[in-house]
Image 1 (cartoon, rainbow over the protein chains, first blue to last red):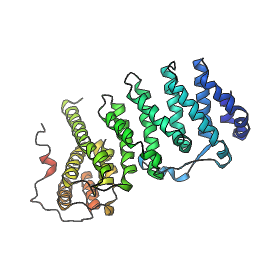
Image 2 (cartoon, chains in turn blue, brown):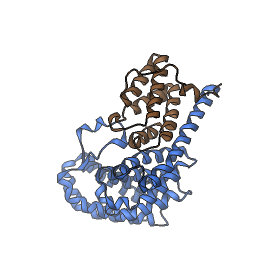
Image 3 (cartoon, each protein chain N blue to C red):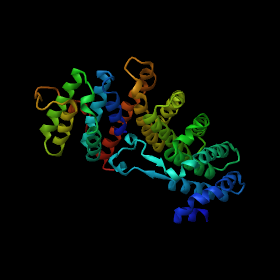
Image 4 (cartoon, rainbow over the protein chains, first blue to last red):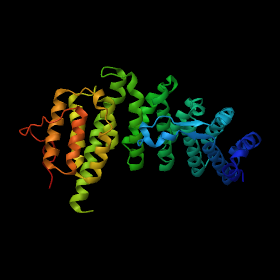
Length: 247
Length: 110
């Protein structure tokens, strides 16, 4: 019901947030899965409504080249602290060993949306978020959807780095690099594709402090050139086979 | 994938070795064979900030060969040549006696 109010009565949103935010947040630890999922959905709608997009966003076709054009509306800036608290609760959901696959996927979508819309809130829990991405991506028993979302969150964090060049993100480059390289070798096309998207943003994040002789170039860029060449070659062969066989 | 390769060139074009650049461009040129890939490559290549990159001399030769080949084929492919031309900012220095990398990279085609 709160969902409907958020979407249909934006003028009530500020009052609703003041009254209900903390109560809804407690639902994250609810035993009943459907209640938990409904709480995630409400927070997703809340995050969509409290931000605004710059009008020239359409000028950037490629997501990787898009600068940070999403800003929290001035009247909701005071709630950023509450979003930081929400991230902390969300991390607890991921760490809950009893959490079902559906709950984990839904919470990863909420985390992704928060990273895109209010990145500063996520950066405040960066160490825990990177660890969460590492664990949930590396577990091959997790669903492809969850693992893909982990790479999407990684890409969104790297986008922040392209614009703001934060030392606390740079500290995690070895883990980020390991995850991206691992995704490029995965059997799932979805993961490979998402990995390449994250890698494209990683290039841009790396570039400002890089030259051919720097350690960063040798560590992060040099190893992927061969993989990119190999993938370009193999996709080309696939295409030739399809064309030849008329598939 | 193609977008990623182009991003690699556009971001690190000035510091990648001539061999790496030439390898990447050879595979990209090969992708111009299929219509879908052609559009994707052309769109992606148009984003390369030409004046910011200082390509080595042998890579410039590579572009000249590309321009010759695509101009020779004519039609829609000709515009790909124009894009390659824009990248290195050279207009009409194609040399007809240069070995063609496009056909050379596909000698095993059926």
